[in-house]
Amino acid sequence: MPEKSWIERLSDRGDSWFRASKLEKEGRFEEASRYYVEEAEKQKGKNLGMAAVSYLAAAKCLVKAGRKDEAVKLFRLAASHYEKYAEEVLAVSPNSALWGYQMASKSYMWAEDYKKADELLEKAKSLMDKLELKPVKVEISGDVPLFKTYKSRRGKEDSK
Image 1: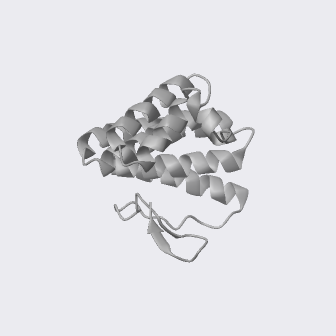
Image 2: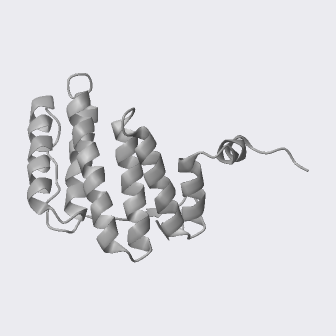
């Protein structure tokens, strides 16, 4: 029997994120969502950024499973955690805070809270001005894709 790879060893230890990722790849979106939420709950008090990413992944899985109403609640949780993350890191890492505000804005938009999405987009723009970065070219109109199309290394187009 061949020796397990490092990723197989990690995923065998019961880690929620790896288990969710595997289930998502298998198309078992509802199950994957539960494990992403489990990971988010574990990370809540320790790592707001990871909690936010986990809630976002869970919400995307529910969208893929056709459960948009439940996904909206998770998008809102993701947005709230991204916002808290941005506030927490603002003094030590303005670029990370900028990312947090941008992700919070997108997540609120996906949660259909356009007022809050616009508010956080304005915070991101203000921070960009202070950091003297290029302006954000995102409008809160529902046209931000939830899933990006990308080109694989072989040049084939895939959708995630």
